[in-house]
Image 1 (spheres, rainbow, N blue to C red):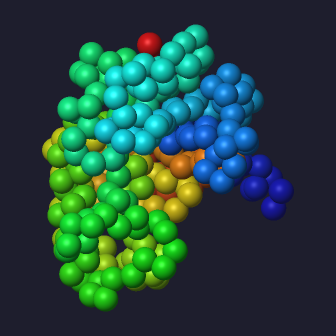
Image 2 (cartoon, helix red, strand yellow; image 1 turned 90 degrees about the vertical axis):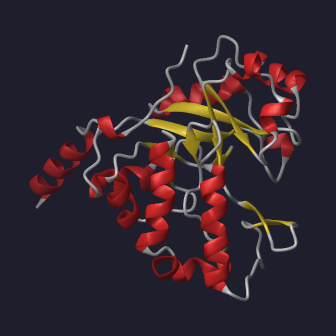
Length: 255
């Protein structure tokens, strides 16, 4: 029994899957005083043996809202062995951030979690209490919105297939093969890597298998905010379950 366990552990340790977490936030959501510096993140990255990609957030609003704030973010990572990324919101961010400055980022990521309701008002899907009376109507509009997000000049689709807490239990029902196929096709067509997200344990294994068969590329993401950064356990497990290897993953070129 012990020999079998040791052999299994050795087999898992010997896989060629990249140890990279491209969804790291070093600012604390709940307590800014607990935020960490890029140097501290780099030290933790080295300790864990997992390369970090740190995401700032914004576009035309938020922490990053113009070239000045983007340049300030980039300066903070000079000489630090971390990937530098930006998680953008909305669709006008190319207007607010010059192409020249964006070129100094290692990658740009986006998700569909700020979702417009039928009145055009934005709904933050991750907040508690978010509900939709007609789940099927929500899904049809949500899939369309994800496809729109995936039409942007980004490299990583974060939080893929996320559902509000009120609909989580219906994931297998609501993410039908046709709906999965639509977003996968958009990601593959636009050469956007699909994140395997530990925080929300998404996407499902069935989604990953379909995406692999379609030729998609993947990344690992903890979606950790100071705590839990570097936790790519879900991604590693689903990757092994679906037979992914290093060639199925995208990584920034780095500098």
